[in-house]
Image 1 (tube, helix red, strand yellow):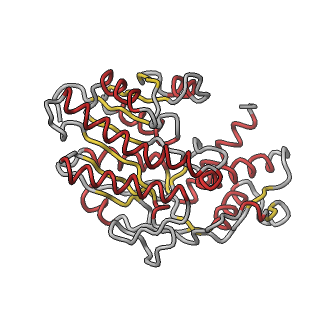
Image 2 (cartoon, rainbow, N blue to C red):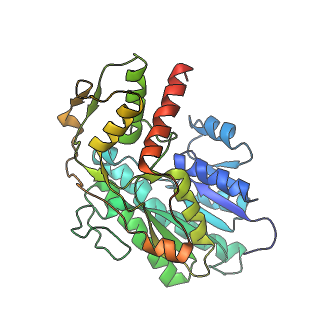
Image 3 (tube, rainbow, N blue to C red):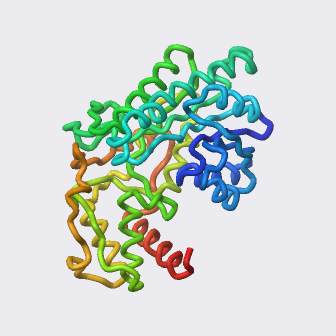
Length: 334
């Protein structure tokens, strides 16, 4: 790595991971550049407010020329490809768009980095270190549990299929061109910055509203689906650690604990003093996935041993943090 100030370029910087990663990198002394999709992106102001020192560039993972312009302007040492159509339920209704962005967008970004290195780094394809945001949704219906880096990939959604394509393409560029390209297979990670369409934030927001008398019920689909939930602020540290390794590789990032959506609801309601929440939760069959993933739980042994990484925030602390943030936001009318 260079001795001067390191520089990073982050796609998907408007999402929860992008924001936490930008804060982490700035705290470590990086010059941080972010790619923002669309001239009037509604979340651009959020980035400018939370991380005002980030240099923003307009770009799109489906547009090679815009990515090359961003790379030329930033001249990064590290690229974090977090951009994606990331809401799983949305991917069934918009499978083609999900594929264009979440699958083919990875190829476009990898190729842009390769071309940028050829033009500006003297063909040293290892000069720019690349991180790909892979996902536990790639495991889908795999019978092995817990899931690790060698577990069979069996995706059960267009989103999961798209992530598998991007994951294998990252490996292919690493093996074909010698790129320093690593993938983080991140299990579900949440925060108060999570979008309200995701079930964790949907629960925390509704529970906060019910506790304040602003709502009466919460509609949910499958309460028995089980996930391995961690804190996004912990997980972005793992992303950074991957790119500090001498050799690129793939790592599962997870807590190793699994909880059901029912557990999530129970902890959230209990945090606001409601022990019997049955009268507040309504089952909505429309929220059931066309192909459900019943249980995901990760084995992050490799990350612990090689990266020295482990999660700091536990499940109940995470849920409580999210509920408290939504209560505060609703009280102030934000």
